[in-house]
Length: 130
Image 1: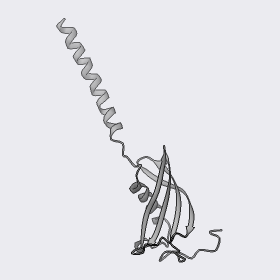
Image 2: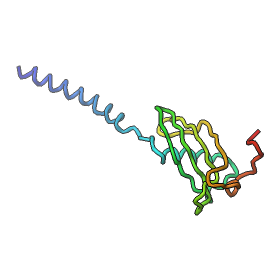
Image 3: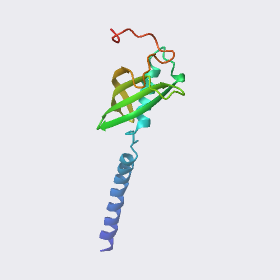
Image 4: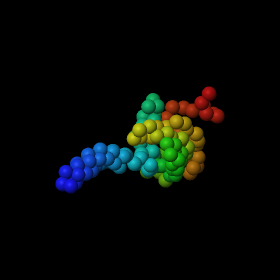
């Protein structure tokens, strides 16, 4: 009787030793379904584009929706200190591990009536890139 109780306790302890780390790993997954994580992905993408001077710009993720490993975000760009957005872009993102990556973009000038590209932006041809 005593041995069977000890055996049961040992078995229970072994099961806990296996399950606790598994629950810990899943419980510690980074939550990236937020505007800050999306903004980080957008800024990372923009940093990879040469010629952009982002130091004079404010970037605001105005709207974002998440569907599993996909996200869509509306992002407004404005000159620092200005209330008018100069550029409104739509971003499609994909989750890769613990971060979002930009898959595609669309959008353009508009918002608050801005007509100029952000400071340091390379010239754009009418109708977009060819």
